[in-house]
Image: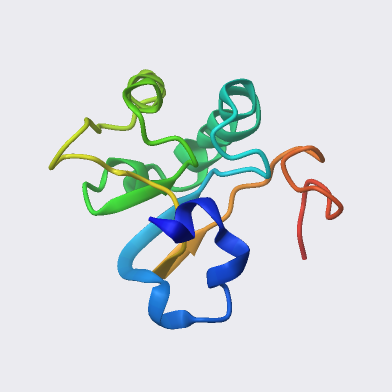
Length: 120
């Protein structure tokens, strides 16, 4: 739980990382939990994943790192085509995770502070 709030404190200690999961799509942006950034910077990137990797979105083992795992986040994710719900069928994650395959869709400059829309 502490790593969800104070992420920087857990970066060096890999024993605090969760996972590994089979596949993670990273939609989180620098303002994790901020409603409008979640919608504008995070969820808009799902379209890219739908176009490039439709099977990844459909695969029930794929997790989506959103920075907002509340029922509000769940509802918006369902509207964007992610089959998820609060509880055992939750596919939204936050905090520090390891993944066997990680997808990082391109975003806008706001979503990738100081890096830009297309990280190298």
